[in-house]
Length: 107
Image (cartoon, one colour):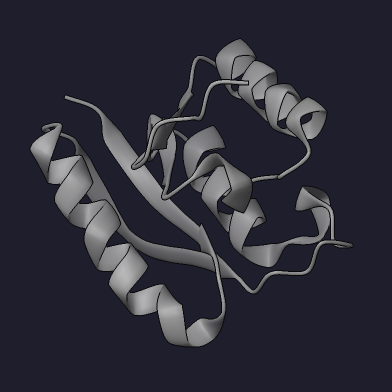
């Protein structure tokens, strides 16, 4: 059974319901959910390396406490498809995964 850490990048007032929805989605997939709430507020100019919430999520994964990161939509990681695919590659190389609550759109 996989274990995930949840990450959202939304305005603060929308974070709680998104974390709850991620927990329900993870449970429906029979994934365990870590207690950490990894969150950032949207700032298109801020790269992932400068987002404390994303860095916390990745630290939990790198240290072996989770198998992957669960997010509501890929855009919360990056709306830039090249940057998003780079994240997918990095996770894959580490043996980890990115779980999406809502599937990617066809491009």
